[in-house]
Image 1 (cartoon, rainbow, N blue to C red):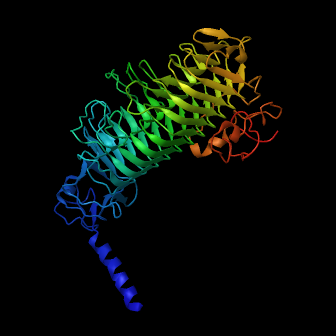
Image 2 (image 1 turned 90 degrees about the vertical axis):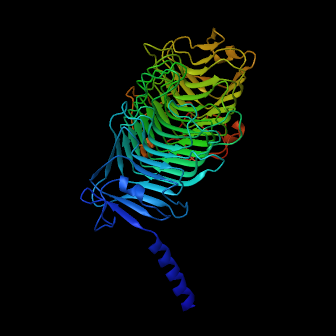
Image 3 (image 1 turned 45 degrees about the vertical axis):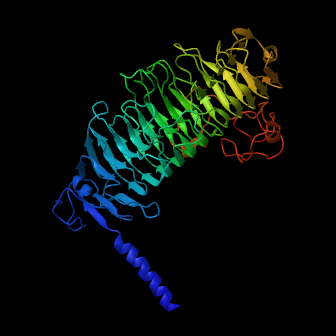
Amino acid sequence: MRIVITMLLLGLMSIRMIAAEYYLSNFGHDSYDGSKEKPWKTLQRLYQQSLQPGDAIYLAGGHAFYGTLYLDEKSCSADSKNPIIIDTWGQGRPKIFAGDSSAILIRNLGGIEIRDIEVIGRNRMANRGSGIRIINDKPGNQQLKHIRIHNVVAHGFKWAGIFVGGIPTDDPGFEAPEGCRFGFRDVLIDSCSAFDNVYYGIHVTAHWKAYDNQYGNANVVIRDCYAWDNPGDPTYTKNHSGSGIMLDDCENGIIEYCVAFRNGALNAGQTGGPIGIWAHASTNIKIQYCESFSNRTGGAADGGGFDFDGGVTHSVMQYCYSHDNDGAGYLMWNWYGAPFRLGDNVIRYCISENDCQRHEYGAVHLGGAPISNITVHNNVFVTRAAEDASPRGVLVAPGAHINIRFFNNVFLVDKNVPLVDFKDDLAEAYFSHNGFWSLSQQPLFYRAKEHYGHPEEWTILNQQMENNLMIDPLIVTTHTNETIGYPHHLSSLRNFRLLPHSSLFEAGLAFDDMQVSVLGFDFFGNPLPKKGALSIGVQQTVK
């Protein structure tokens, strides 16, 4: 037994001895051996080194490095189970000044971990790279495995502060060689900040192909990240620019505990616009415990809080807070020609306040190409009037949309703001046990430009309303918009709670009646009953 243990220990020791550590410092020299006692000086020296799985690169804390830290499959051998690590040593955070290029460029390698580094571009319009750019442009169907990006600060870049994936499909400046289809699997981006970048703060994507049944990336988590002041490109009008966090072309993904704000102000897109936090052309996505606010658009569209777009299926937005955005609070939009259908999605236990400040949007806004099987339940939508916009509580754009269901929601609107606006008769919609309230003497329900004063009058053709309440919900609304800024504390919101004498306590449908999955708690952390009536809105506490 002792012999076996000794052999195992020797085996572990030999594995550790194979892995090498390389150190960089402003006080080093490229002729040294790269040890901690004799570190190298420049990033360029690294590319001359053949790195192996488990090797580690350490940049001296508080030191400045210039150019690009570049690793690729020609200079390195990578292993998802024994990753190459790029980290810091000593006190403080090292900074990489990239000038007009990317600061860290990893090409065709999985098994990479990057930690505790600040990357800086010369300025966002002059730069032509990304802060961290990890790309797979190998032909074939291989998703490279294991990417970790932790506690990175990225700013001053054109395309993104942090980019992971395959070749982007429609971003300007990128062309995908034939057969380059896939990105990465098993990706974690956490505790990162991305600001003052043009197109995205954080972007995960690949070269999606219309009407395919495969996704470029898989198992991606973006957690505890901040994206702000990524303003967009004022010279680019073809499509959107200036989003906070976008997860694209992904099967199984989570965006949680993230904050996006003040993005998109310089977007000039005339066919689409930026969003604070969103997913596109993906399936099995959760966006949860996030705050998205004060996002803008300088173009013809969007500037909203959250979005499932362009073929997102089987996905959920929950426990999120959207406020003071130019566009919709919660958008689901499928454009004609999108790579996948859009359907089987849920919005629940979310809040929108004072969104829809430009153009014509709803606090919850659905449409585009036909969508199906959308459930919106137990949310609060507070929609205020806007000088330069036409806001709505709910807006459903024209289209033969199927099985759009609204349960247990609070819709509270300012004077002369429509509660519900369906742009034509084709959508098949169902409203039950919602609380509607308008500060107008005559609430407005629109259907194909005809307006009605009460939900039951609106039940025509494919639209159904039953057991809804036209009553003041008696929720806390201080008219002082709250910004939390730290999503782990979203439950500390003072607004949107039911006052003790509200009629909405336990006045909603039960989970079984809505035919949706059972949740354990409400927006504020109160337990939810597995059986029996739910309260209307985002708070459950028993009256």
